Length: 217
Image (cartoon, rainbow, N blue to C red; front, side, top):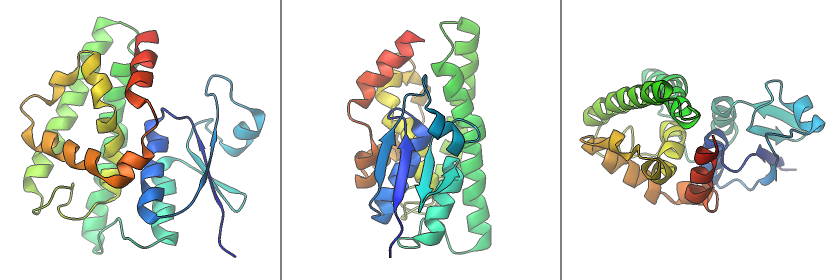
């Protein structure tokens, strides 16, 4: 009997979107259960020790943290492969995923939830720009192809894609200039946005909902 997959989600969460991308890449059917992060149900808090989404429930066993979920999916659903074969290349991919989590998303989060504080806005802008410049450098060194490592879509791409699906909302908020002069990142973002799995994982009305959320902070 095949396993059942249920992804517990908040529709605007970029971390959930990452796992949706991977599930679509793998062609794995899954159910989604949406919760209100401002009113988390008790059953969810029992599944998620950190009280965060995503949580992937596989045959009644909960797995939390998007990077762990995505590595699990790569292990149990090996085709198509979303990590390179060699240990050095795999380590490099995992390092960039950690960079996206700890640096880029930290800056994005600061920017999104600055609450109008000009100091925090500038901190967020500086962190995001610096992170994008590092990604620009990595893209210039890649093998030929549209994705982070070249020709093949990977877990790094799934991790970074939600930043760019939200870029239209960043532009509305006046932060679109953070991509100015970063030609490789601009081309890379377009390749990600054209990817079928990225389109399928994107929440309906994402830009409008994100702008509403950001303006309410």
